[in-house]
Image (cartoon, rainbow, N blue to C red; front, side, top):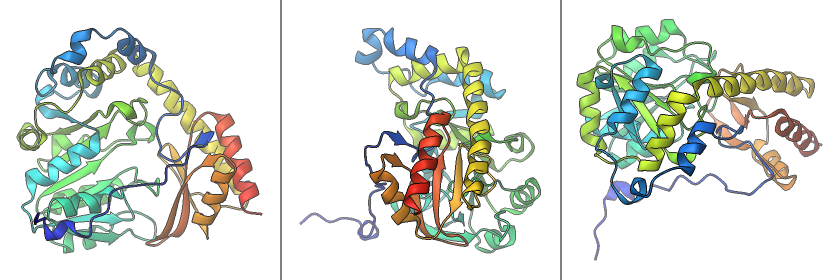
Length: 345
């Protein structure tokens, strides 16, 4: 008889509903297409890019990320999406049986990562203003504190004052997830230089339009990054994914910024249109809007029947039911508004 880990028995796979729809606003990815330079890199890739292993630990990609972020390559590591780096960080800095504290609600994969790494997952409700509750997070005694800012799914940000207080009083690592930073008004990545216990994760899945290529990165002091790389393994990207990411970072940052600005403009326009329907979307600094709405799962199901897919949440702490609506080209947003209007009738 095969013996499995008892702690795995109640773990379910991450499985959001996959329903083909003409308009899919459910996963917060770039709906404007891929960077043109990345598309060229894909089309022009040499056979050896597929038949040979890439160079261990992605030094060329680190160089491109260094130019983009302003951090030396020794302060950077990469992974198969930023969620991979979060998983690696948990293995690097926590022993099985230790505790991780995460704001609630936040990135849904955190509970999963905690379980598969044998950790005690401690959700800490956000404050009524949706800032992080610093005292409550510190009271957990966790040696790794996770903060997603802008936060998924609420689209809100942690205040600078709260984050600094958390970092300065934390007994261990503070992991700041900035997956949506290109859509925000500011970043907290400078804390990496001024504090020794901060690790920032980011991704090319959102603003850069490379979600299918699975490229993320982390920024931290070299001694922190070195520990994460021990858990990472040498080959986390395909050679094609690396080439596409390097092309986007070196040739198409302006393209990315223009698409991000369009997403932000449509985010504001969509928020006003939702308010005109009598709804109250949360203030957003991400590429999506979070809309508290009773009976959200039923409404999302009805919207899918109308060929529009959005993400529904049920019974979230401090919120209740809500919809998360990604922001893309305006015709897609118009379709979502029409479907939502019909679904609520």
